[in-house]
Image (cartoon, rainbow, N blue to C red):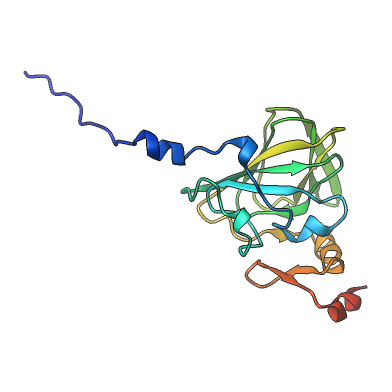
Length: 192
């Protein structure tokens, strides 16, 4: 019986692969990706690396995924100063966190209690669907956290009611489609 070689696999040129490389030191994100980012303690730079581009601010070109779309997940970075991070929220898919440097509190709601786990570089945690979660840089220097949100449709971010109220005080809210909107001053005073 004659031996046959397997069919050749797909071909990718060096030029195409270079377009699929993101150099960490050259990545630029945005400080207004989500409604909580004006709330003191939740300031951060969000960088969408690959995938669906999880954001509430679709008009900011700096939030476009640097490597383009991907099927089934979104991946990126949060760069935070000490004491800063994301407020309580949940997704309709799992979310994975892995610090690249520093120490991070990954916290979540367990009924009425708040729990946390502290992660160091390259430790990883997976947060289940529907659990309110947040993260905070608990280091004494700026640090970067890698995140992955699963699923072909991550849906919109669901914020804890306390976060929505605090964000409205800063002039931000989201519309029915989960996109950022400015709250007029008249409406802000109604929330006070």
